[in-house]
Amino acid sequence: MSRHVIKRLPIDTGVSGWEAISERAYPATALDHDITADWLIVGGGFAGLSAARRLSQLRPQDKIVILEARELAKGPAGRNSGFMIDVPHSLSSGEYSVADEQSTKEEIKQNRLAIAFAADAAAEYGLSREIFDPSGKVNAAASDRGLGLNENYRKSLEKIGEDYRVLDADQMREMTGSHYYRGGLYTPGAVMIQPAEYIRGLAQGLRSKVGIYEHSPVLELSREGKLWKARSNRGSVSAPKVILGVNGHIESFGHFRRRLLHIFTYASMTAAFSQNEFGGDVTGVDRWALLPADPMGATVRKVTTNGRSRIVVRTRFTYDPSLRVSDRRVAGVAAEQRRSFDARFPGLKALPMEYSWAGALCLSRNHVPAFGEVEEGLFSACCENGLGTVKSTLAGMMAADLAVGANSRELDQYRNQPEPTRLPPEPIAWLGVNSVIRFQELRAGREG
Image 1 (cartoon, rainbow, N blue to C red):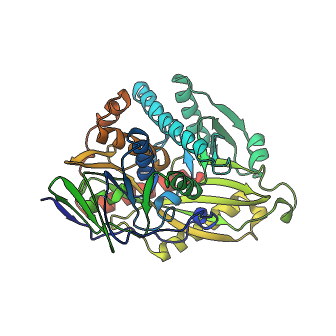
Image 2 (image 1 turned 135 degrees about the horizontal axis):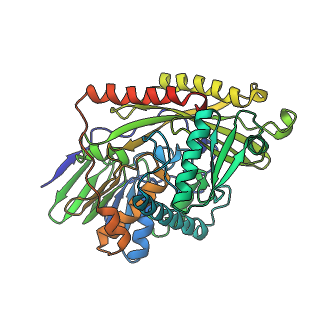
Image 3 (image 1 turned 30 degrees about the vertical axis):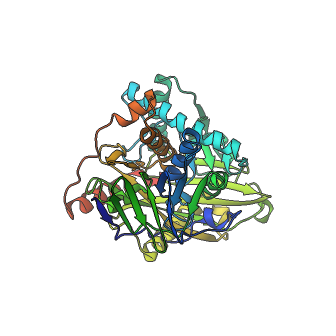
């Protein structure tokens, strides 16, 4: 009998602004009895909900159950910047330009498959444009180095036949209201989502087909005969097949240990404001989304609802194998983000930051997912390599296909990847990874 006792449960630091400003349409229900199902999915984020939707399409008569340790959208899925990106986007490479044309084209196809799946869900469940907005994104440059990185990226996109548009300083200022940026590179295929609203909307759409239990962490997962049994606080679920959509916490279930990098990034969101509160057009148009030309720089988004706007700033990365960070760390980074924000928008220095939070990412050294059938009837859809909205959506889809025995070219390509490579022992890994991160952040300079 295989038995996994889960001793480390998710801990999320700070209140995500995305979750705080979203609304629930239904109450959270916890598991309080023993049940059986055809499918159990552990984790109610992008991977888990996407797997559930895919299973409901492939096996509409089957009983599907999701167990979420906390509350939907309060974990990492509701803490990201909300970019669903189709073109290459590697956080660890130092820049976005690519060398291998064929693998890049295949990655773009996979990303667009996931985005199309999400778009179908948004349309089916009536998600508004404020929740799912196919607006594209801009790589913003604030320095000579940033302009050079954007130019390298532009050449890469041109070489593989991808659309783009170069923006000058005046166009960046017209869009953002800021004099900080010297140029930008627009690509049209990205979708901007309100991540917490998207997760809650996806769950709402699935509720008629899928049993979703929140505040129901899996404390033990064991194989008993032909069934897996997941025990929670006040009940259990028994099912022949289980999909784990728990990202870095897959290690807590006994798999891919010492093969995954647990990275945290940090964000702050302003209080809501109207354009006329500060005089002049100091923040540009109602909505825009900027990625930094240097991957280690600052991601900045403006969102507007009913005439009230907010700006989100995401900066800094840390490697934390404990899978938790302190309130003090979040507060320290928030002070840095205040300075970064003020440099971009000096006219908004009186505007307070209302929310600051940390969010967990999972990467592997060789940039591959933690995917596949890891034990009989137990499937992993984990490790999104810093692009959780798209990569986790894709992993959930592919895990469902694999688990039901569906055959497709996309699944063959996705599963035909090596296993995540092993990490050096601690504290060597901690010292090495954090040193590289800090060097890259310092090198990003004005882009941060």
